[in-house]
Image (cartoon, rainbow, N blue to C red; front, side):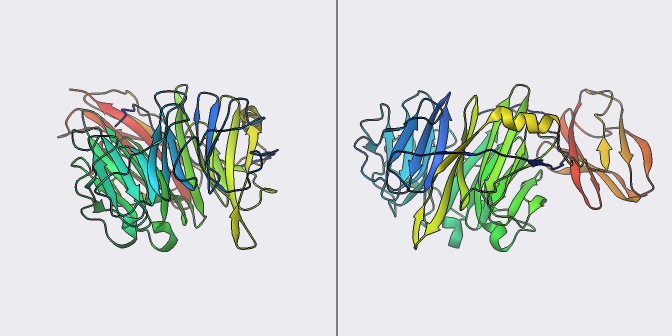
Length: 422
């Protein structure tokens, strides 16, 4: 899996971003736009029945790049490695093209169904270089792009056989994969061979997990029952926006930070993994099911029901319009707890953590290792409002990266990273 080294800072706040969405017609197509991705400033869009299209001019014109693909009902498309490379998961086959003309059907022997929902990278190991997720048949892997495919779904069952997304993380400290299914999140620590469900606290629509993103031991999920994260591999899921329907999640590095878009019936944006803002989707028919971004625009694909037929469109908005809204947010509300970066950091003998509480209430600060295991319950008590500082001595802990999380009743948690040296 691609290595990512990011400092995680979670302090959630919201404000409305007044959006001026512009419809972006794709020729005569009115099919739902099921999946999108951007390669530099080229946007690819997969549709539910009309194939795959691309735009190189921010949506002004579109070109049909379906070539000789064997099925035009696209469930998912992914890219990488070149401007014309596409992995396409369709209702009848998994296709790969290096030129937007010739599509090879890679769904060779071994699959129980050709209704493909995910076709892209596996974990890069000898036997799982590539992966195929299916609609009801589980997960398959192969060392070759065109198979044959071996079943890699031990531990998956029921709606967990409906695969929506696959991601993972690896570095010198931790290596794992995470699977988004219609029965929650599954984790694997053995190259996608065996899967363990980890959905403590999730139920109902919260188990319909459409997209996920993995950053160290920090895992985010977009579900039909809310947006959540975990730092302990699903032993507990923290609600960020509960009880809202989300269909898609886009997370990508931006400068020294990270951008997040989570969208569905509602939408939120974070430019720094520090603050979240509500995206105004009023006037957009249906719900957002796909998203992509170029250097200048955010694109969303929608789905709506018209006379029992799924249809949809694409809309775009300039990125700088979002940034302008953030620079002077109207009605901005900040969490009433703040926690500073520990000092010194890195440290060997001790460090200090300063924090502010503006309301009386129950406060907890816990420290977790890089695998998400709790190693210290630093603060766990009722405190009156005020400024505080607590000293932490890492007795018995090995050197490495750790996370500390502050929670207060009624507010989103705050997460920061510390480094212990020896």
